[in-house]
Image (cartoon, protein in one colour):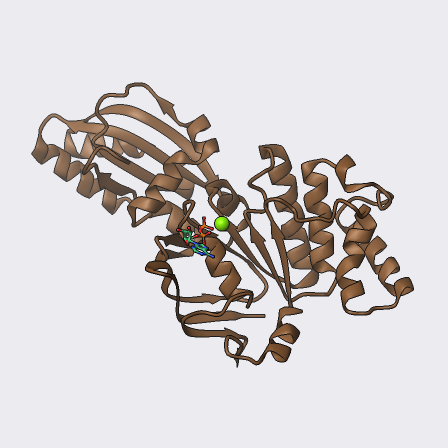
Length: 334
Ligand SMILES: Nc1ncnc2c1ncn2[C@@H]1O[C@H](COP(=O)(O)OP(=O)(O)O)[C@@H](O)[C@H]1O
Ligand SMILES: [Mg+2]
């Protein structure tokens, strides 16, 4: 199912939690929405999933307008949506299997059918045989698997994941993301990943939108956005990505006026020496690293260029001609 938002806004008093957001989320892929804490992500999810009504704007599922439906029809549309959260929201008084059965009980499915289906879902999420486990005995990753199974119990078309991996360690995060991607393909789901973790977008999403102060400031193919970030927010996310931090090596905390961004095979080519030869420029490399984005290598190099401003300028031109993005430092941030 495709989702379309047109000029959607939501205010809490004087606060513009979501402001004039227009967005198209294609069907059958994992779409990322990234933003810092307080950016308006959860509010946006509540609007898209019809838990709250926008103050203005329109929301469409495929070509059907859904934001203004009467209550009964709204509930019908909401059946198409599954959600998982950071804190799992499972019933601690129920077993793992009973949690998965819960939404089917609500729909008055007969007990035998719901039990069979819950068991199938249990093995889909890799927890076969653990149905009788009390929730308190499960690890964070296992709890999220149960939450995923429960979300899938009513055969939704869309799965919303609101900070679904934020409470998990990196290894469990990777396992959960792999499971979500696998389920997306198997069930032809539209998955919307809402997160403040760039790693999640990098490892799971085909497309991404960057939300800042209630507005979408950047969007597109995840690899494109990562290779050529346009806004300070996106650049900040990229620099703070945990794997990037691990793989970026800094020789010096001083200097670093230019940031070069290489994409794909260019990380393998001797571009620096080529530019040095062509322009006579000298380089002082301050930091460098490689990041893998949706299977593509992205290199980053922070350096100074000499011996003079004129040579530096022709070196920058040469880099750009060779397809390397060059950013000049403005205010000390990358
Ligand atoms: N129900 C609410 N009432 C008042 N303010 C809210 C409510 N929900 C969210 N907000 C405010 O809206 C802003 C966006 O919040 P939220 O959507 O939760 O952001 P995020 O999920 O990106 O951290 C925040 O400033 C938050 O305090
Ligand atoms: Mg939130």
